Figure 1 (cartoon, each protein chain N blue to C red):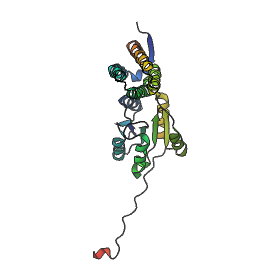
Figure 2: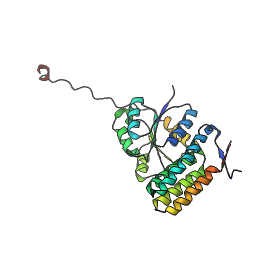
Figure 3: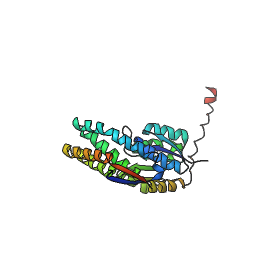
Figure 4: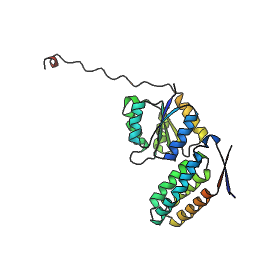
Amino acid sequence: MKKKVLIIDDAEEMLVLMRRILELKGLEVHCARDGKTGARLAGELLPDLITLDFNMPDQNGVETYSLLRSCPATAVIPVIFISGVMTGLIKRMVVDNPRIGFLRKPVRREEFEKCVGAMLSLPRLEPPPQPPPRKKSGYEEYE
Amino acid sequence: MAKYIVHADPDLREIIPGFLKNRGEELPALAALLAAGDLDGLRKAGHKLAGSGGGYGFDRLSELGKALEAAAGAKDAPGAASLLAALKEYLENIEIVYE
């Protein structure tokens, strides 16, 4: 089965470029032009990897990442941040978490392929199990 | 005769013409931003160009985008105008060699 990658980027030319490179690698590619749509698609598709533009209008990459982290099913998906500059915040995130990568724009094919390959080789984590439904107390049975 | 020969990735042959066509079609909008004094709009456009050009193999576009972002960010309208002229001249004189 093909591995799935979700690209979240507001720039059409970046979506076209990254889609082309990833499809040449035999990957199934999905795209979103904004963070909210991207987070929704991530929940529906549960991709193996997400590439996330840092600098987007409305909801930037970090806000979108927080949204992904807030859902157990998407919190375990590796993310590659893509940005023109390596901010202190991204640096800390990359250092602290091996499931977060970083690529500087302009994205070169060779380093993009290398980073995607490395992130896709990480073991796929399952989301933590949901807590069991609360048992009814004796009193509730009579309500 | 083309002045700028760019050696591009043959795997990107399908998407490069569209990319360049769109950049060319953006030029009037960029000129309109300059005429309207919307330097913040130009700064954003420069940032986008800087981020995408090199990925397609056009490092010069990324350089021009970066310079446009810096000039517009510094409210340097004459500098931005000169960079837009350089961008137009570059886009009109590219020859692509896929190899």
